[in-house]
Amino acid sequence: MFTVTPLAISAKKDILDLEARSAPDVPYYYRYVNDVSALDYIFQHPDICQAFGVYENNVLVGWGSYRSGWAGQNIKGPGIFEISSIVVDIAYRRKGIGKMLLKRIIQELLSKSDCHTIYLTVFPGNTSALMLYLSEGFEIYDYKKDLYGPGVHRVYLQYKTKQ
Ligand SMILES: CC(C)(COP(=O)(O)OP(=O)(O)OC[C@H]1O[C@@H](n2cnc3c(N)ncnc32)[C@H](O)[C@@H]1OP(=O)(O)O)[C@@H](O)C(=O)NCCC(=O)NCCS
Image (cartoon, rainbow, N blue to C red):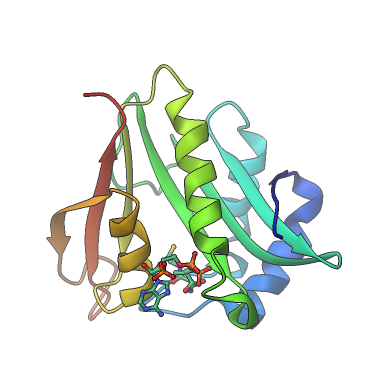
C-alpha cells in the first residue's frame, strides 16, 4: 500500500536521483537536474507551490508537484497553478502511484480558495501522461508546435476547479 506525503527540501537529492533513473528526457520532459533553481523555487514558495512523494523502503519511487508564479511558467495569472511534474520510478509504474499523486495535487489545489485553474503541458507522444490526466478530468485546450524548440511540441491540458 502506497502513501503520498508532502516533501520538504531535504528530499531534493531523492527527487534528482529518481529523475536520473526514471524520468524521460527531451522532448518528453526536462529533468530538474538541468535547472535545479526550478526545483528550489518549489520549496522556497510553500504558499503557492508544493511537492509530494511516495516512498518505499526509504527510496522515493514517485513524486509530483504544483507551482505558481514561477518565471518560466508559460500561463500566468492569479489563481492559475501548474502541475510541474509527476514522475514514477520505471519499476513502479501501472500500480496507481501516478494517479495517487495527481489526485493529491488536485485535492490540495481544490482547497485553495484562490485557485480557479490547474494546467499543465505534455509532449503529444507521451501517451501514459495524457491518459493519466484525461482519466482525472483534465481537458485538452491547446497545442503549440515547437514550443520549447524544434520537435519539442506541447499539448495544453486544464482542469477548472470552479464552475
Ligand atoms: C505518466 C506516469 C507518471 C504515470 O504513472 P503511473 O504510476 O504508471 O500511472 P498509474 O498507474 O497511476 O496509471 C493511472 C492511469 O494513467 C494511464 N496510464 C498510465 N500508464 C499508461 C500507459 N503506459 N499506457 C496507457 N495509459 C497509461 C491509465 O489511464 C492509468 O489508469 P489504469 O491503470 O486504470 O488504466 C509515468 O508513466 C511516468 O512517470 N512517466 C514518465 C514521466 C512523465 O512523462 N511524466 C509526465 C510529464 S510531467
